Image 1 (cartoon, rainbow, N blue to C red):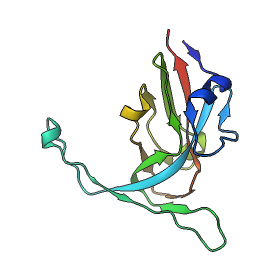
Image 2: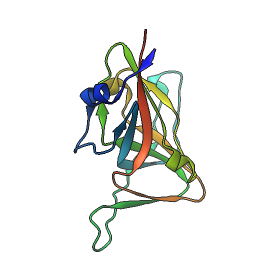
Image 3: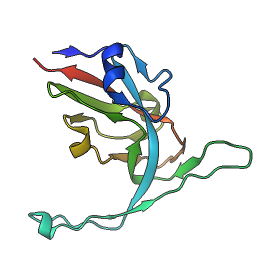
Length: 151
C-alpha cells in the first residue's frame, strides 16, 4: 500500500471552488456544506421494510449583518452533514475520512470511515456535538482524509 500524493490527489478531487491549501502532501481537508439535525426516533427492523429513519431537519446557516458567510449554532446532539468536496476514488484505492483535529479538540466528533465508491457510499457523515455545543461556519474544515492505493 502507498499514500497518493498531492499531484495524484488533485486529479481525483472535485472542489466547488479552487482548493487553496486543501491538499498538502498526502492529506486532504474537507469542508462543511450542509447540516441536518437528526430528530425523533428511528426504527430499525430486520430488513429495509421494517426500518423507519429518524427525521432530518435541514438547518439553514445564518448570516449576521456585514458577514459574507453563514454560521450554524449547533447544540448538543446528532447531525447529518455533507461535504463541499467530492472524490472520484480509483478502483484500486480506498479513501479514509477522519475527524479533523480542530473539531476533536472542541468536543465534536464523527466516525472514521473507509470509502471505495463516493457516489454509492457517501450520502453524508454523522456528526456528534458534545454538551458544550459549537458554532461552525459555512465551508469550515471538518474532516481530513487520505487515499491509499491497495496492492
